[in-house]
Every structure is written in structure tokens, then in C-alpha cells.
Image (cartoon, rainbow over all chains, first blue to last red):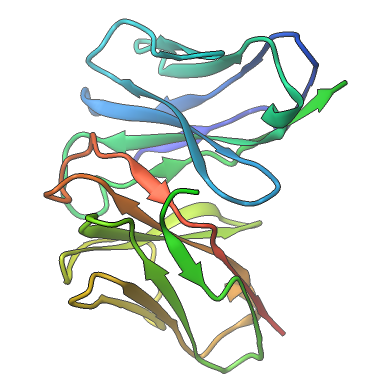
Length: 118
Length: 117
């Protein structure tokens, strides 16, 4: 079974600075998708960024980028120019590319709570 | 706003009771997923429906059941409730036409907060 581990329960960053959130995963599959979701105090789960495992190029979305290291099974999220609105829980998630049973659905890490200091 | 709606937002009930959570997917989405978020277990996938049929099942208890109706809204039924069922229950829907493409993005609703006393 696949697992996702986020080793940093809490992180803090100064406004306008850069912060990196860590995520590692365990799988025996070669094809899969990785996601970062943001959960602000409103509790809404918001997709931040997605990475396909077959793509070597790291995904970027405006101030958000990932460092995907497939061999190391590592998938970190970098937030540049941090803003107060970035304060939230961030969840790393895995989704198999092979559909069947529960394998096609999202497997989440425990989350990292990010605080942004003004 | 993701376009996925869930009702009610909050629900307080007693042990042994039964409740129904409702989800309306985004317009045009055929797949609905249910997730449970608790302090102990984190975010866990419960069940998926596609166009009215059960498509995938995760860590869903036998006391829980779900269905998807012809208008594509879905209901999650929780019965014989226990204290440990207190959690945030999310519904998500996916944009793809088939419900089986892992590339499909899942859009989450705001959740229903269930408190069992």
C-alpha cells in the first residue's frame, strides 16, 4: 500500500520570504500523480499544484513550485514571496495511475501547518 | 468556491443515531468522492460513485453507506454513530467524463462537520 509522509507538523515563514514544505512517499508503482492541497481556516480543500510522475520537469504555478525527486520519492513544495493568505494546512497527496479498487483515489499525508508572520 | 456544495455545514447528534450528509457535485461532473478527516486518521478516502454506480471503495465502515441519485447528487449515510465518528466529511467531484482517469482533478466541497456526543 502507498503511504505519504509529511515530517514537518508545523512551519513558519516571514512574509515575502521563501519556505519549503517536505513530503516523501512510498510506492512500488512507476506511474502516479502527486498533489499539494491547501486547507485554509475555512476548511476548504484547494488544489495548489499537481505533478505527473512521468514528467521530469518540475511543476510550477505562479509562486508555487515543486522539487520532484522520483528516485528519492520526494516531493517538496516551495512557496516564494510568502503572503499572509498562504497561511494554512498543506497536504501532500498521492494518486495511483492504475485504477482499481481504491487505488485511483487520493492518499493524503498528515499535513503541515504553515504560519506566515507579518 | 469550487462549485461543490455540501449540507449541512454542521451536525451535532448523539451516539447510536443516524445522519445523512448531502453533496451536490459541480455542474457536469459525474464522479463523487467522499473523504473523512479526523484528528486520529487524517484524511481518508471512503467511497466513490460514478454516474449512479459505486466505482471504488476505501476505508468505509459497514455502518456507513452512500448512494448517488439520477440528478448526480450524493448522500452519505452514517448509522449507529460512535464518538469516534466525529470528523469533517468532505465530498469531492471530478471533472472528467469517465471517472477513471487519475489525471482528473478532484474539487472539494466545504465539508460537513459532524460532532457525535
